[in-house]
Amino acid sequence: MFDYLIVGAGFAGSVLAERLASQSGKKILIVDTRPHIGGNAYDHYDDNGVLVHKYGPHIFHTNSLDVFEYLSHFTEWRSYEHRVLASVDGQLVPIPINLNTVNRLYGLSLTSFQLEEFFASVAEPKEYIRTSEDVVVSKVGRELYEKFFRGYTRKQWGIDPSELDKSVTARVPTRTNRDDRYFTDTYQAMPLHGYTRMFEKMLSHPNIKIMLNTDYREIQEVIPYREMIYTGPVDQFFDYRYGKLPYRSLDFKHETLNTPVHQTAPVVNYPNEQPYTRVTEFKYLTGQEHPKTSIVYEYPRAEGDPYYPVPRPENAELYKKYKALADETSDVHFVGRLATYKYYNMDQVVAQALTIYAKLAARSSWDPTVNGHALTTT
Ligand SMILES: Cc1cc2nc3c(=O)[nH]c(=O)nc-3n(C[C@H](O)[C@H](O)[C@H](O)COP(=O)(O)OP(=O)(O)OC[C@H]3O[C@@H](n4cnc5c(N)ncnc54)[C@H](O)[C@@H]3O)c2cc1C
Image (cartoon, rainbow, N blue to C red):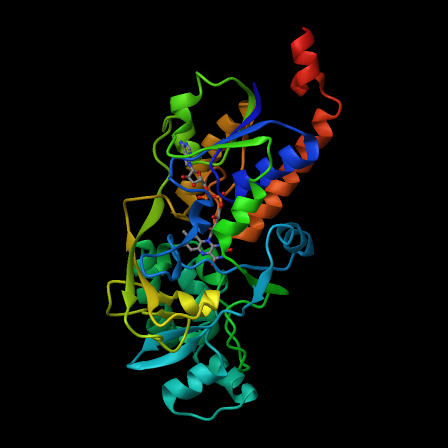
């Protein structure tokens, strides 16, 4: 008998499997429909021997010392600060928009102070910031919004930013200095030998059994377990009772090129003409040296694997109905990006899983109904 059936071997499922096995002595079966562990963070060596991220670039960054220290048990790190260029008006300029971006784009030599004045002169103040368009236009004005954000957001989400919740573009800052880092978190690093190696170490405990290529619904009735931790899509768990929660998906087109370097930055964004949103060159992320280089193009799609919950008020309402069902299902714990229908980064999912573990551990130390000894004696 397994103590826990964990559905999904991404960050949410793997952190919980690791903690429950190593700290609480629980027996775990972790299943995933995919043929690999790691969830969306899975990386592997492609046919040419270049380390690539199968589901698009995954950059680790966090302000949480707890999360960073926890993951450091399973990997060494390679220091890495992410930088992105955007292809606008025939030039490659840094994004987030900063002093260099504006100066290069318009052939100016403004100072930080002058850039603040420039933004103030073009910004369209809004009394109430509601949409993604409001966020940007109220900071940098309509022209920069059109060049950098409107087309990109429409491609990515299939919706005009004027109809999309403010949370989407609020993630991208605007700066008046020359700081061109994409993230400013305290800890920014990549797992030295890749994410999959890190997951392998997390799941290597003898109490953890892994079953790949398996939908939990195939084994749920035949393999006994006490409780479930579910990290798949919450609407799927309830057989889409209230309808499907909308997601955006992506097609990834991977390519290997017969040249050591392809582009001048780890990621180049294409806000306008192209059907893809961005191109990533993995060797910048991984630090690998190789005579060839591998890149990936991302094409946003309405259908396909669920990647991004679509942040619109009606979707939040629909999720609330599923959350109410989830709250009533007391022997299943819903954790992670898909199960809570939230746009979480990896570190946030790790933090969420560690919190849930702390709750389970505190509870199982006194609750006889989830304690294996009590069950076997009644
Ligand atoms: C393109 C892209 C880029 C990203 N870039 C970054 C980044 O740079 N930095 C960052 O911090 N975060 C990034 N993220 C977010 C990151 O991927 C997530 O935070 C993280 O992977 C979430 O982990 P999870 O365990 O919640 O979900 P997942 O990794 O999605 O794992 C859930 C697993 O459950 C499995 N599953 C689902 N249903 C079933 C079922 N019925 N039976 C069995 N198994 C099932 C799935 O196959 C999946 O493997 C990115 C996400 C995407 C899509």
